[in-house]
Image (cartoon, rainbow, N blue to C red; front, top):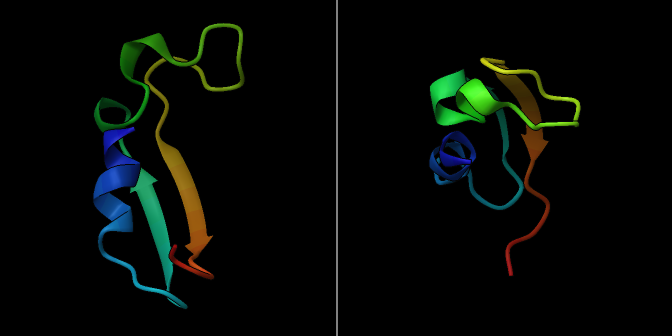
Length: 53
C-alpha cells in the first residue's frame, strides 16, 4: 500500500516508526473484501525495523 511504502522510507535499520495511514494511502473505498480491513479504514502500525536485506 502506498502509505506503507512512503513511511518505511523514513526509518533505518534498528529504528522504530508509528504509521497512521489514511484510507486514501491504504486500501481506500474497497478495503479488503472478505478480510479484516473495512472500506475507508485508517491503518495504524507500530514497526521496529530489525534488519534490511
